[in-house]
Length: 432
Image (cartoon, rainbow, N blue to C red; front, top):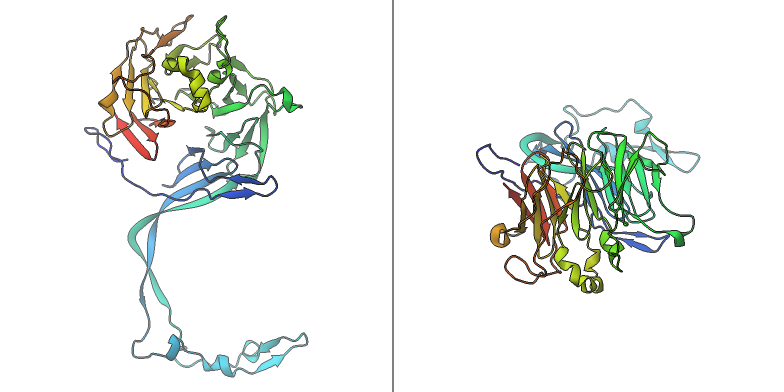
């Protein structure tokens, strides 16, 4: 990313490489897709980029580095001397007498005697290329480690630790702790698998390390709860340090209640004070010092509530949308249908609620949604602030939403006010 202070950043193509290949688990007769589920950047070193990538079963640790290109400048071949078939055979290799050994092998006398003489100037048939390092560079990706065979279920999250040495990987029932330098073993730190699988009531949906405290991590569940755990308490963190969940309103329970309450993604704020969570209907901002309820709730899909039956029939209700926070902590964002994404202000007194389309003209569907003012995040909040309610079933232009085009993945730059959105097979970068 290249830019000056006076203009927007300019992004250029850097490199690409194949991270995973299709695999087949012969023991379980299971095909493992090459599709990448998560990517996480690691700490840089010596000008090289490091990242973790995972598919359903296997995690890989990659190093991407610029290397100078080495080229063959010239061959020390005398063009006046040519030999048939392009090779010259040394007479010594053809006429060397051999001795037969007891086991049936043979050995040349040339390796047993020191009386071999070479012609002056060496053997004329030996031609060596001259390799020089050019000024050109190329990016080379090399897989440093492969972390495999540790998950029975599909991996849904990876998160690297602030200590720069460890990371976690999570599937539906377990969270494992890895050392970046050791790929042969991992430690199981969370296990929610019941003795009898018929007693299973919830699964792990996302997990994230605290950005500054290396002993703290959070994970979310399909029941809409977030658990904060402390690795210093015990080796197996069966009990949580804090539990964050919103109490269900009396009489509001329906067939879809648990489905839409399932949290698809969680993210810590840069300072670690707040956690942002995304369920099917809303974005919620939580203060880790206040477990009575979310600080703020942002309505994302409230207009879809009358259509939950249709969404259940076409499986759209199980879509997993990601969320992200700005590096300054003043805005949050998440995706929606029709390649739209929502941006909400979460600073003190902010009423910002904007809808943009992931396209070359993002303002085409922009709409400023009226919202109730929020109270300061630093103050004591005893009520939930709901913002961003939309008109049911239509977008800003009055068009019906397209549930086949969805913006599931997006990320905010950690220091700049820019956001990346993945829509279909395109990546859009926005800067404000």
